[in-house]
Image (cartoon, rainbow, N blue to C red; front, side):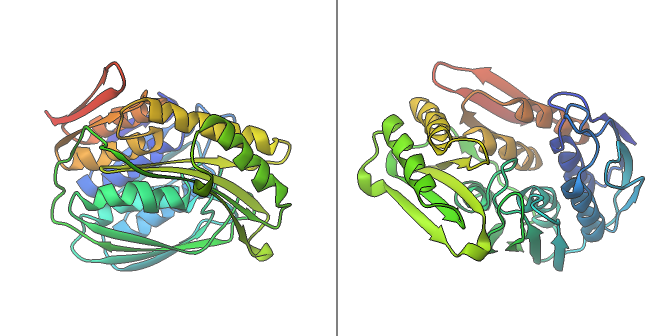
Length: 339
């Protein structure tokens, strides 16, 4: 039985999600205590409970002490069952984070799967659907499986109500990747998406982006969704390179000026562009687990987040791999290698 202190490192829900994925893949049970001990509101939230319930459903697993607000639980995996599964997170709990839990075991399962996930698709506390579709899945598919995701309807924070559908054609094993150079820049875009909110919010966000990033006027556009999808607002900044794509998001929030949302997102993108790294912070977090399952790999990234370092520590509890972070002049190099 692997025992994990959920307050270690960044102390968030990623420790639980990573442990669930790896428990299903390896067949090793675990107990986690002090769940989300580093957060202002510790314990499991609705989206974490859904992730555990979903892991139990696809993996024939058993979980003791599971409830909203739980600060500890014990998870015993069974046999992963591919097929069609549907899970509702409720409100705006992140569908992306539930998918993050389920993908590793299902992309190594004995048959194809289809997932229907309902809840938040554009959540201020998680990578938006666009990141999964445009940044993460294209790289994951280079490792062997074929995973496609479709946004059926958006679900903005705090109301939720979104739906994504994911098709997974598994691979018997994952291939190693070396993502060292991102190649030449092919295109950039700045898209302000808005629903049931004043249109000048999107205008002011894009004006702030223009002050930071010298992107052409035609790269900026406003996308207005029908009112019944709102209220909601997200700013999506995308840079497409030959070998990778980066997407930075900014979320409209009550009481936060649109200009601030635009400027903050633009500065984050400017920081990424000033480096020569392949992976931004979100992608770096999500590459560690599949590379560990592949038995090795390398990628360059901007300064690794506490999320990434915590994920590395959790992975090492389940798999015989070492994850090393090395600082360079314009990037950090992350190396995953078999022990």
